[in-house]
Length: 455
Image (cartoon, rainbow, N blue to C red; front, side, top):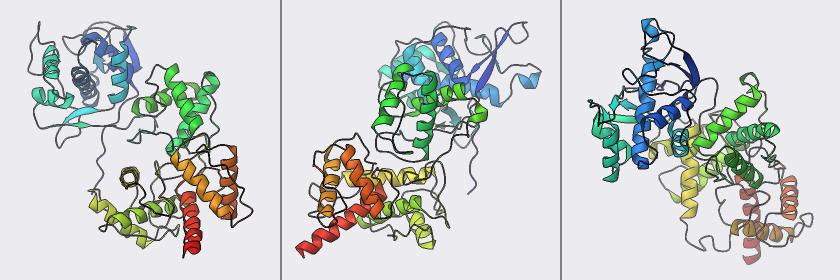
């Protein structure tokens, strides 16, 4: 099945400050900033959030329709859109924008309305609904619909019909990596995490309040969480410590500003245990730790779901792994092509995490628990760290090279040193971080030793 190529979101939009034929200034601004300006000029920040979102979807789609139909350039003009409401949307040069509107735009600026079966942004005509009436969206009308409990999408359907859809997370132009579709948070790993770490460290050169990150490359540890939270504080985002869509694109914006697009790919991405396939595809013929990680997840899922196919953790993406991936994709409604792209990887990790979280207390008996679904790194606390320390101590009773640990439920220097020693002894990547491969190896050794003693 051919891949659908959606229009990309432009980095900038050129606005004519007057009627189309009027001799007036053109200004070029970032597309997201344009949407914030129009929304702050057209609607009221005190409206219900559902109404605000519906209006902002309409503003985004209207502007993108003007751009992708080349409405003005095709008529000989050197701009994308005007700022006069007689023709387009209100835009006031250099105006202040409302904070809550800015946050919503950061979240949805690359989502837009389409007719079902089409990819072109819909021409979402609208008017205020009081002093002017139109066949499109009524801005004041959205308020009463929101107060009735309608969602933003239902509000849009009320005005544009039931045969509309929302294209979410459309790609951004100028080599900006698209948001991976799920937030990056403590314990996550992969190339996307590594990219964010690299870019935050570069941004911190210009914004020293943001602490440097020394977590293992590609592993979202406590230091990465602290750097993200500080970045969010500096740039007026919700301080969650997670890289959601708005944080992802704000990091990209400031990284490009301090580094320059020409240098964007100059920062290396190291492949290690953390290099799970977020931005890169895994396919037949590939090998290494990312493949082993994939096979681990698929094997565990197949144990709990008989419709899936187990696969050995060989580290090689052969026909057996292709079949297991296809079986997973088919069962969960994905294109069954045997290739692990971003969508397939996100589905695998989400279902794995949900499966582990749903297990009853004490499920594993005397055996080691399943990998918790996120990386354990220095600075973390909790039950899974305690279990890790318990397993390592038990193994250390048989293998004297492995140092004894205090079981504190805190991942400190001693735990990191013990993990590194274990990784060295068992031929693993020596990172000090416990991902699926390290956890599985520790669990296998622990289970073997404890079952031998009790057998």
